[in-house]
Image (cartoon, rainbow, N blue to C red):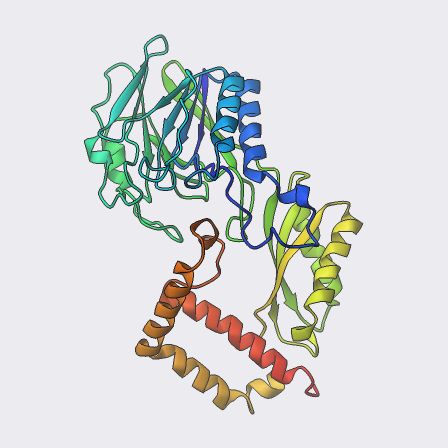
Length: 403
């Protein structure tokens, strides 16, 4: 017997910042998350799973119109097997104002308390607690039911765990306490990068099913879980994304042509893309060379040209410089300027003021687009932005200097 564990579908979430790009084919971006969701249903049918679990954030927020709900109804009818749906922070009961009756094969977990759905013929108990509101600061796992003796017990939980990383903190929990609960499998959601926190029992974040911006690189999909003799026998990651994001880090150095280095990076990215089109960001590191700071258009074209030569499909999201000034100036004329720049970013008062300005700017951006912003939210992120800003400034200053 098999079941599918997915999370963070974020239906109809936009590819923030890309919709108005004339150089990107509209069909590349249109309904990206819907196509990934349909591929997930295709996988469930092909593998003949007994049921599907969605551990939160099926929706990206309130529906713009009823087409979102109708699409889900259509896919659930096609699925034709039970789907156990938990609400997360993006589709909490208080967030979604529009509503349609759920298809008969969809079972939604209660927002008031932990609810257990039983599959008696399979000897499986599935426990979960949906988010009533977007903000859930408390650990919900402590209120989950005791495991059914002699059954296979699955806990469904939308949580930031104890290390949210880039994600906001919601329903935090300690994986050690999850292990003590006595369940056989924890189907988690909220963290968009696939993570396996343990195998005895299995504690799994499957990641989201479709990358939507440059911080969601690599293969995206869900977990196919095999059960044998009432025990978890295997957990496999299966990709269902239809567009993939890639970060191309290339060192700018004089000992090899930059075009060759770019071609190698593009080739490596395409080799792992499983024939999917790529949206890529080129990040140049190493020592700045003349003209690099003003050559973004040519560098983007080099990436596209390398993809054509390799027989793949690649489009550029951005070109960024994280180069250092050339050594001839690094030890001399730019030292005082760099020292002043770094001192400014080391001043706690100035850092606090800058972060407050960033937070105010983020608040003005519509919620669906905030995740795609590169704006830092803490001192570490501000330091990284400072490094990039310095690289751009130094590269521009030294671009026309003699070697």
